[in-house]
Amino acid sequence: MKKYAVITGASSGIGKEFAKILAKEGYALALTARRGDRLRKMAKHLKTECRIVEADLTKEEDCYRLYQSVAELPVAVWINNAGFGHCGTFKEGELEKELDMISVNVRAVHLLTKLVLKKMERQNYGSILNVASCAGLMPAGPYMATYYATKSYVTSLTRAIAEELRYEGSPVYLGCLCPGPVNTEFNEVAEVEFALKGISPAWCARYGYQQMKQGKTVIVPTFSMKAAVTLGRFLPETLYIRIAAHQQKKKKSGRRI
Ligand SMILES: NC(=O)c1ccc[n+]([C@@H]2O[C@H](COP(=O)([O-])OP(=O)(O)OC[C@H]3O[C@@H](n4cnc5c(N)ncnc54)[C@H](OP(=O)(O)O)[C@@H]3O)[C@@H](O)[C@H]2O)c1
Image: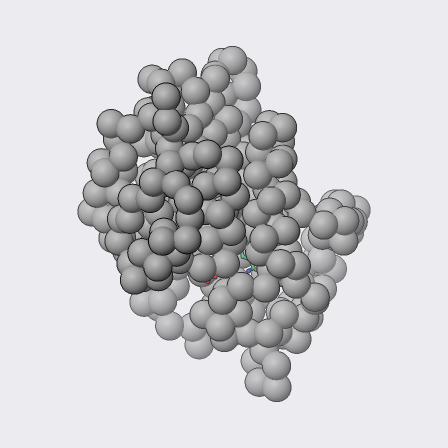
């Protein structure tokens, strides 16, 4: 039986690379993002069945419409990848943009995780991967306050549900991918430049997929980010937050924040 993989935010970056990997693995795909033109163009090059669902995940009705469009299909993999960030002081940040960020990075992930988890339990199989960030494993991120807070929500939610599933012996896998800098369009959208060297989205997605198959709950690509996260556990939180603030400030190349 043909099985499906659904990827949100498949029009660029990490999501696009997940689409390539899952197509090669033989899944039929449902690809979603706002830029349907990009998804249609991509689908022409992927040698598998592709369903395109144009959706703006800031809108609750689009989240439900996306779910309904695949509700009757055997969905084996669901990747909640869509998301974006913004850099600057909290006081000066645009409220509308921040609320949209919370809608995409948190609300849509929460809503879809619940619906898809229930569907996969009814099916008796399935894997859900939430693309969070290393930001979600740190206590706070000054100058990217909302983004860090959204990603903390995703890592906390994912870890908690994963433990519930483990305890129940659920057949469903749930994990979160927590990359450090990845060279995608993220920076353009966030209006920043990385202070650290980024990895390729292809490498990030491949690593995420391999670790997902091994059932890892919190997936951190690259040794340096793993070391940063581990080191963080031994630092006083105030110091760790100050280091994070310093790194975020460096991202706003040339701009004072
Ligand atoms: N790049 C990094 O350094 C990095 C590090 C850690 C975590 N991450 C996380 O990785 C995920 C993917 O980001 P990326 O780095 O691949 O960035 P990207 O290249 O900018 O891709 C973001 C994707 O999210 C989609 N998206 C954004 N807003 C949306 C909305 N309102 N409705 C539906 N789709 C929306 C975009 O599609 P449309 O614009 O076509 O809608 C795009 O496909 C994000 O959750 C991000 O937070 C990235």
